[in-house]
Length: 284
Image (tube, rainbow, N blue to C red; front, side, top):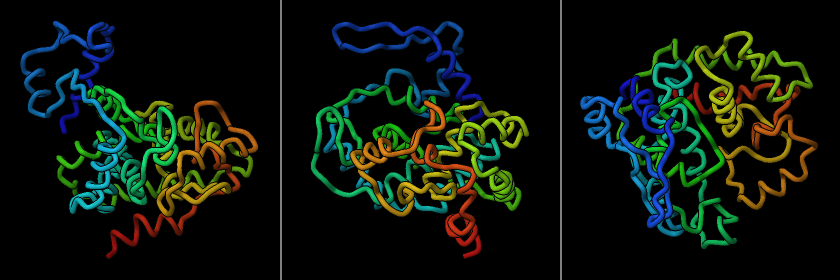
């Protein structure tokens, strides 16, 4: 994974797209500022723009279920990518642990709902530019809202080699957790993000990149909440999550969603869960 991939894709996706009426979709042109070598690099990595694919619930779910049995897709692999994402050495790796956690307890099921499934959140049918979604991850962002994107992300992540993790890589996460654990009881996720930014705990990250890292820790249960079990331990349906959101005492801010939205400073850090997911695995 080359460090300049995000910069190259930015040239394409940060410009206006053209609407193709016959196809009913927006497509991006190759800008003149893109060099032949940059274009060839995208081709080699299978990251050319406008890689549209039509996804339907049943086939997308089956592809996800198949990934559950992939020998390479395991906790050591996704943890290694996440730790390199935390250090900033490979920001593309920040998303994969989040995607893996969603997949971990995903059940076989039939579609329920209207436009999206009330069980898994996958759309009934959707057309997606896969490269555009991957651009977000190459830019260092990680999200937990749209499960279809987890499929695109995981299928690409399996192309990567598992990075070698050092003690320094583990220490970076340990330092972040120690800092979070110093929160005052009433601290909200928004206040935590600002405190991390002010103290430069995650340098070279923007607000939403920091939220993505914190959201992953919340999905692990390392940043616990009082409303429901973490996705690392138990699958919650989309309908269940909607109902929990309605019952919450109030979100800390509009751009923070569950499970991070349920964390407060009083919850501190679940170091037992951190040890289970990261430390014990390293020592075994």
